[in-house]
Length: 162
Image 1 (cartoon, rainbow, N blue to C red):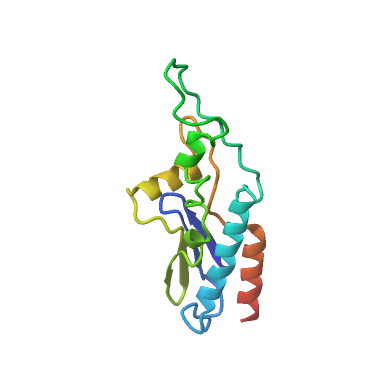
Image 2: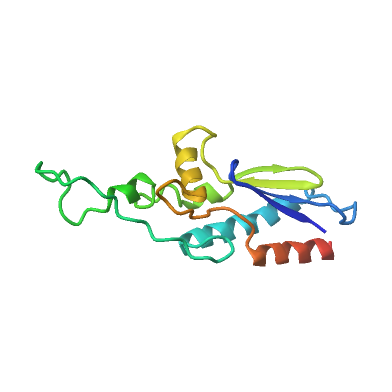
């Protein structure tokens, strides 16, 4: 049976073929790519629905609390909260389809890995996405990656029929 693993540090998901027929090769005829396409689209749909891949709704974004100051407002009333903009929610950068599809991929005969596109560990985009996914001291996790049950079922069925 295929193993479905998630690496929260690398923001990646991997399919590992263990006991499937040895003739199944994920690197041939775009099999691995097609399976990862299903994953990427499902993860994007989850993010757009503001839910974890397993369907659990994300905690709402909290308003950023600022100290009361007598200084004039730097933003006109009605502007989006600074926290939401900082996380890339208001700009759409973090939840853009291009972060999910195609994502970063590594496909070998018995493994296929998809990773959220973030420009490299330690970079600003990675740090924001990782903190959003795993949570922080003052922020609940809002999982971006993982294996949706329907995708695992679909992949298992495809591999069984192959």
